Length: 639
Image (cartoon, rainbow, N blue to C red; front, side, top):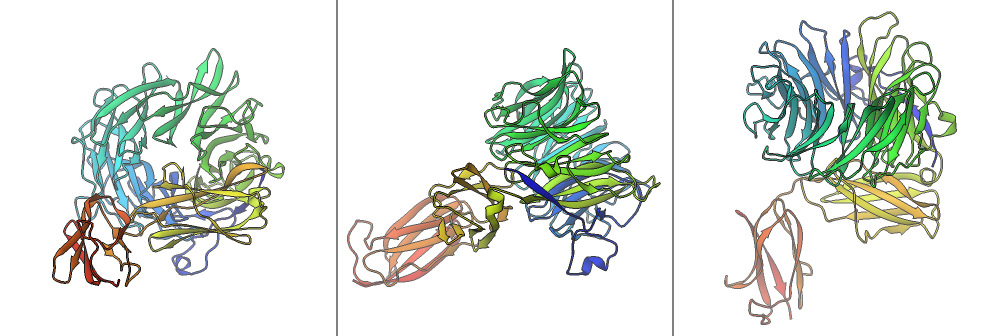
């Protein structure tokens, strides 16, 4: 399935007045997301969960190094302060940021902090409006993860799936050891003060949630070069450590189904190899050591993303042709290489292509961006590769994101919308400038054939506490079949919905999902199968179900004979009792008496008492008790 590529350029943020306009568009070559012009570096970008992105960067415009954060919507409009929001207002340098979305339009940022004259680890939580939420004082200057007197640095961060975070860092205690801490939703320490010891003599950690409230932490032994994965559970107990291989330049992602997938570089008898492995929640190495590519020439900086089906897409820079080029490979859930055994060329243009970054495209393929030297100076380019490893011939060597004057470098990419991605990079324009600023642009994967041409539009709408998916095709044969999968949370694996009950009206299709829990977030994927085989049609952005109070609905039918249905909505886990009373207040029967999970429930009453005897016509009351909350309604039985 080939893809054509278009590029949507980035919004200019030239003045505060521009941010108040209702019309916004992305403009050519991008523009700075921070109006203060000075040395900015290390841009990072994550999706905000609502079609936009959140970007953080290091800013040296003041006496001390700061970290700033900005949120932009899907049209490029800056949603927070015109110059970005600082993580704190204290003295000292704040450096080495890492950022993750919070699932509600905000973000968590962790960094190395010198406010006490010693390097410590601090964390900040931003709400969807850019307000700082964490800190012991009114200024909300962040919560400490570790303030031990020795130096702490190189933090990484993951969600704990309970509104908090898990952080790991390198600590001078015990000679460059790895430590970890968990902070709850208010920023308070959950584990022992100043962290839990993970391992001695370890390098830069990578932290990924484990799907159960704990985390996988990847780290490297500095003496022997062994790459290890440790699991720490929600209570801060280290459960196991597994050696996955030896090498460096390691990366790790959540691979779905309570697993992580790693890639790294290894030199073996003169050959430089890109390797990969999957590790399960119990420490089992479920993949053997996969050789993604190996040869005597050099390769560096592997990056990977999920393929959405339990596998991964890996990209790296490769000098097999004499200059650095960009290649990619896909590994399926069973560890098989799916593309060209030599790797698929993403870009082999003249001169150097370096520093690849990657994000999923929502259809089993990926967006890949890199720093490109084909013009004689460094620009930013991107390409899209589909689930079959195909790149449209007209875009063999990619499309430019930014070719403005000056140097563009260190690109990062996130995919906040299906079929599009947002790219952030450091930019030294105008020519001759020695200072770098942070720029952003949106790129788009335009369709050209197969599923992409038949899909004209799709939508995902919240209807109270249910979700409705709609899609429109340009053509649909009788043999075309659809399936719908649902994932709970932003990072969880898609699971198929049995008998989805899709309705069709010509070329328009609709699916309704009423079986949802308030206060939770869901994503959906629709797959299509026809004579060409099965493939992803589209994937939605996360949709959050609003929290609801306890609700007891009117029975249906009412009046009734001989039976009726009672429906209620439970907002949280609680002991539940549903009882029927006569007009005199006498208990007729108890329909429910158990602890239930949050969700929607439907109960049938057949007009009998607790002894199974048929009751007479008349007025009855039904009462719902959930914890300390009570709701009641009337109903009429007419025989």
